[in-house]
Image 1 (cartoon, helix red, strand yellow):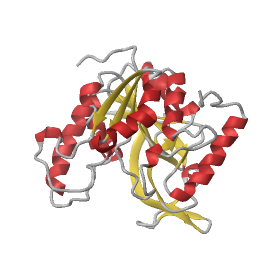
Image 2 (cartoon, rainbow, N blue to C red):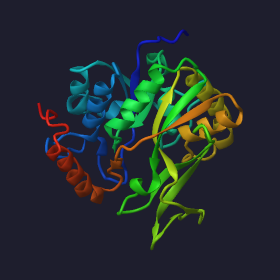
Image 3 (spheres, rainbow, N blue to C red):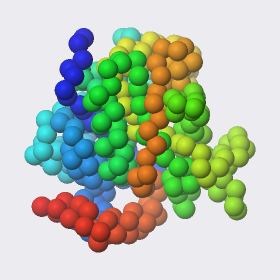
Image 4 (cartoon, rainbow, N blue to C red):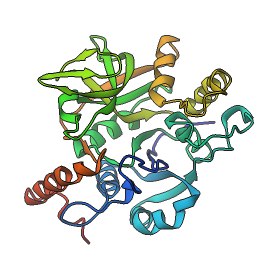
Length: 300
C-alpha cells in the first residue's frame, strides 16, 4: 500500500481500563480547564501539524469516550475510531478465553485498516509535552525511509512516580542516536537514593533514556506485528495474562536489522496519572503551564 507523503496521523491507545487507578483514567478531568490529558495531547499534536487522529478504544465505553474526548478531536481534524477486540487477532488466530487485552502491539495492529500514512503512537493517559510532538511530527513528515522509525526519548528521573513503581522501556543508542535495544523494566522505583528495577534488581540511572511509548512509525509496522504476534500466540496460548508490547516488537525488528529507530531526545516535561495519588502533582503542573500562558484557550 502506497504511503501518502503529506499526511501524518496521531494514533492514541485508549483501550486500557486503568485498573490501578480504579476508573477510566483516560477520562479523568484535570487542571484549571477540567480537561483530560488526552485533550492536551490532541491540542499539542494539532498545533505540531498532525491532521488526523485515530483512537483505539473498547466498544464498552465508546459513547462515553466520544462525548468526553472524541467531539473535541472531531472539531479540529479528521477523527477515526478503532476497537481493540479480544476475538480479532493478527494472522486470523482463533480467540482464546482470557480477561486481559493482548497488549500494545495488538492495540496498534487494530488500527491497520485506518492508517496508510506515517503515524505516531502514544498512550491516552500521559502528558508528553509540545516539544516532543513537534520533533516527532517533523521527523515522520520528512522521513523518506519506510524502514526507519522514531522514538521520543525522555530522562528516566523525570518520569518516575512518587506513589509506586512504573514500567519503562530503557533505551540504548549508538553514536548517531539510533536505538540499539530497548528493555522493558516493569517495576522501576526508588530505593533510598537508588533507582532500580525491583523485579530484576538491575540498578538504573537518572539520565538513562527511556521510552514513554511515544513512537513514530510507517505502515509497514502492521505486517511486522502480525508476523511476531503469530509466534507469540503459539508460545503463550496457555498464559492468559501474557501481553505483546510494542517495545518487544521493535526490539526484535532492530535485532533482525529490519528497521532502525531514531531516538529524538526531548526537553519536554512528561507526567502521567499512574496512580490516583498522582492527580495532585498533575493538577499542579497543568496549573503552572496555565500561569505561563500555555493552553489558555483549552477551556474554549
